[in-house]
Image 1 (cartoon, rainbow, N blue to C red):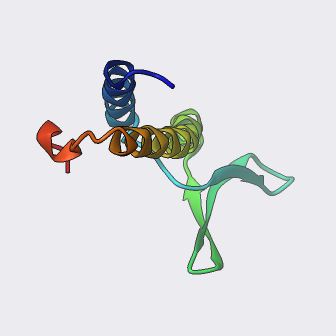
Image 2: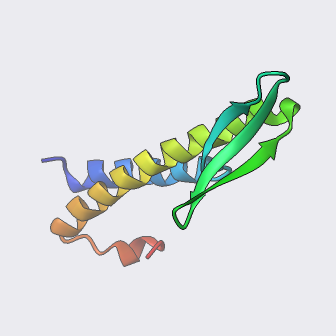
Length: 99
């Protein structure tokens, strides 16, 4: 089991990484049409697939932002696990200003 100090350092790192990835988009980039190059951002909203046009010159940025969403999901899951370990150790996370 990691020490409380080690867990707090990991928690601080995760919080910083989450903050660094907050410019994100949910969905995936896909192409449409065979006759010309065009792109969409596809997402699910209340179980219904929604598609939005992505300008060709913004595709790289949109892909990077959707990758950030995937990274955020991983970071948030990991932060939840660290928070749980800290709570088990008796650390009152309210003392750290984020709860």
